[in-house]
Length: 228
Image (cartoon, rainbow, N blue to C red):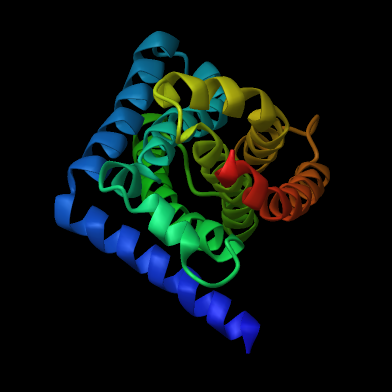
């Protein structure tokens, strides 16, 4: 029964955030525009060398998702902070981890839509053919997104009460995301380019391990972080 109540509360928080974003639309449009701009800049920087473009495409894709995602994470708690609703939300009966779960779910949907746009633009811009191993590629993208969104949502909560949260969040988030992004980039490269020097399976297993560790640790630590 307690789990059901927590799930309903998390779903309500996620739905509220998604509906607020749907009404404004400005947030998603600016985030998506930033992601596409980063990819275009990478395309210009790499020039006409097809091999260089294909080799750099996975890195460009994930870096675009990272920098655009930071904008989304910075907005995670902005509505509650601007409206003075964060404290009443924390005082509501129930486990506070359900708030984190709701924010996590909303950000997952938001970043997934962003990744759809980023991947579609990457395929066209970098002249990448969809590989026959696309189900594994989709799995890698989802696993990479879980790690990105989990840490992004958690550190956004940590930085939310700071006046310099736009600066503080990247400083906290980027070092922690290095293993996730490295594994996601290498697994994506192995599946897209077919580089025999990189084993997609090993990198995927690392992604799973990182996701499990980060999910458990952030859920356990959220109560202390949101109180700080």
